[in-house]
Length: 612
Image 1 (spheres, rainbow, N blue to C red):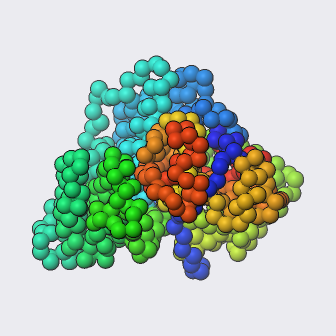
Image 2 (cartoon, rainbow, N blue to C red; image 1 turned 180 degrees about the vertical axis):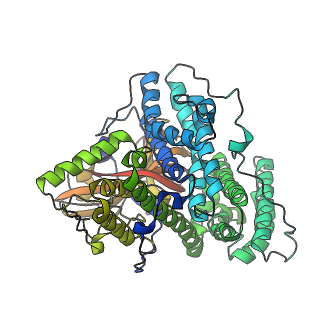
Image 3 (cartoon, rainbow, N blue to C red; image 1 turned 90 degrees about the vertical axis):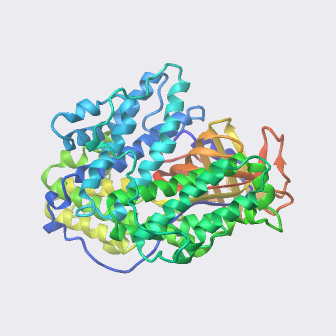
């Protein structure tokens, strides 16, 4: 990515927790029996289940490159072009595989009619059509947890990525028509995310025992919260408004074990209801609930951004008002966050447990079909590298997973070794959730023994590709924040431990520390303002010593709230600003969260990286 060369120049202060992702380790050794699975065992739209998240990832990647075009170029496969035409061609190339799969999934000749290739106005709706078609296989073939994860991806694409993409295309000068004259037929339309089914329940009664009635109660409380936030006027009492919101959520929190006095506790704990609904509800009902929850999260963030200075004074004080506690991100409970992480883990596990065995099953029959949704430039590069390693006799030819500091794909316990006989050691595969990545090793091993190199390459590429798709993350930075490219690129950064004196000074000069230092960096590209970032977030965890500084980058769509910190504070030892208040570093707390789209590794000192 093009932002890499700026990172050695960052001033690193404060405390950062960036991209905290879900991870639960389990020792189960449950196995995939891929020898007994056939492509038809995965439903009518299994190809779309591969193509959909890949398309989201590729569009996100392209949009982030366009947003960061003014940052010095790094080692990327396809640089952005010099014109709108070249940039659109890059975008269309990255989704060409998705369109091939989508057209094959639509009725008759509908594909080219409603989703013509190389048409930007159709792109947003046609991504939605893909998930609408996938819902027909839920839950018979596609697990509801996997489906909810895809809903999270689609919502963020439609509400956050797409507006940024429109903005970047418009900046390039030529007007592009981005609305459709012909509506999408009802059979392909899920853009409303469905309507909540009506169940008899009252927020004033105790009859909230069933999952469906809680869902209805949450919809009512969400609607009331929107109304109250919309009706608030400047300088009016926030405590009075918050009292009404708390009263609406109190009976729901009684059932969900959340704290009605803090919105973020309500938000994170409410994922338990979505998990319960996934067990008993229809795809339509789940769609509605996910949409409403994410919509309320965005509305609360927007309200906090609108009143950022007032929020900061209410929250960052020793005696918080009721409103201060309600909006304070730090007042959420650990149990609520654990619920959210479990929700994310289930979705990621379900996705991986579908895409890896299905891709292997297809590759046994038709390698071209198995790879049609891939970014062909990246897949050819991957295959070329694998062939070169095999020719050299490299024992580490089967490196399947990227290294993440705190990802759900947490750490390499060893490289996936694969010689010409495909002898892969199961113990060397990172385990995710219910022993999943140990099972992945067995998938690749069995595939290798059964049919050879084609299946192995497909399975390994799928593992690598999906390792950074669909992990939920927190983006929390307390320290100094600054725009690099005003309005487009910003970061917040901080040292967490180690040599904070000379180590920090050396890193600012692009040199390794004399001893040791641990640091985290939050980086955002897209649309950045003083009180908010919207776009693509980069979380960096690095351990630096005299020998070097290796870092990991995870990238996902996010929207943040940036609140100025009251000083003095231990997080900002140099005061409210470093440098000029307009162009310098401001002491801030930046928070948000989302779901990852892609990731890469780089060396903080040398800039060596594998970013696209």
